[in-house]
Image (cartoon, rainbow over all chains, first blue to last red):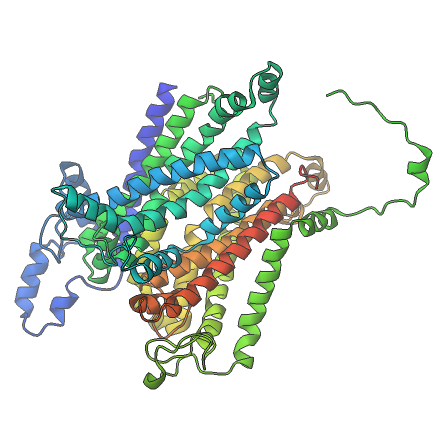
Length: 323
Length: 310
């Protein structure tokens, strides 16, 4: 089994290299010059422009630049932002905590919502509550985050503005948590992005828990447990739920990149200065090294979350054979 | 479970012989019983009619601005109100729907075609080709879709616009990129279906009759694995519409003069407190379409699965 994990981990590295090559090639072959802003500026003389290109290494052919990028990557040098004039990794490091906090809390919340609701409705599949939940979870899947985000803004920042439930419309990016008051403020301003993302994920997760439970409940081992005279509670919570959660755990791992992609939208709506907002800004100002870095981080998330899913699945499910 | 073989009673044989129904008839009967799926199907048909016929019946211009009529509330002189520069939101929703729905359908067509061809070749031929195609599928599956979509649309927008014209160019790139980044699930579905079906007798029979490999793949095997493909196609339409709206909402999709639903919502995002309808109405139509498509696709999955006898 461990050789399987090792092999699976080793495959992840060439996959990431291949992806980074594709992204780098796309960025380099695309029309549009990162120096365009200087090219259109008449104040910048051509020789200065040439010097800048050379100092940024842009005079070399792109495969050479890719090779340099790849070699420096493990040393923590992800390149240099054109626009902010600082190392890409520092730039990303400044923005990552905001995104991680919002995404982490909302993901945790959506698991907390999905498991009890999914289990409850699977145990009582033909009740009106169960039908309602299946309609609502489908609605959660179909809901564009900018619609739920807008509705939350309207409710909490416009309609309830002067009540205790009112929430700030714009995320204060300067806020530093240093005491209780600023901590409460931080929670209040993160509440809406967290709710929107939790709703976005809880829909699909509830459906998954529910269908996984529904698959397990008619199984022989559940009948055996009932036949032994165990209470319905024990049968469902201990026997069926444990087995149903195995595929759910993998879904939780695989879903990580999706919720980060969802954060790109919520950060635009609520103006959170996270990594998604940085991606959009950097794309718009042709800050290629930063774009490269962020898209590569997304690729790492996709590859590693599926790696984790595989490993966890192998550890949890004794039926999986490794060959 | 022990079952007793019931002797056929006289009454059972004498009643009028039950009509023999084809598989698709049975599937349709199962589908009709699913109220949510039927509701989804009816909603899809109504939405299609709305965007196809709508602009002929409601002839207000979707692009004409009128600053004097800006921020009109819905259900006043304008059914869906007006936006920040006085454009008629209903007219924009009707025109935008045409683009949004065509994006969904066209992107689905690309992703399903790609997935079916790749899956069919991998499953049918196996061996080295299967290995190579599946590694490519793995690689694509590892691509971060939304960031890449944003990036590619932005990078190649101007070039494609110059070559194919403003509207068609941007349409092609969005549809092409969504299709090219979403075929993997369908490829796996088709591959596993082909792996199972190619061992069956009817394939051997056609091979014995001297049918070539391509007709065996696409005329004999493919129709037998069409069920899961249809389900995947339906769900793909909803996903593609949501993806396009995401990209347009972020300002990296269609240019501002092309009203797609996502673009309309993006136009309204700065006026949430004074004119919320400008963002809510198009966003609601995206939601409605995705919901209807998802319910219909879900119902289709249940109806086409012969193990579920309803």
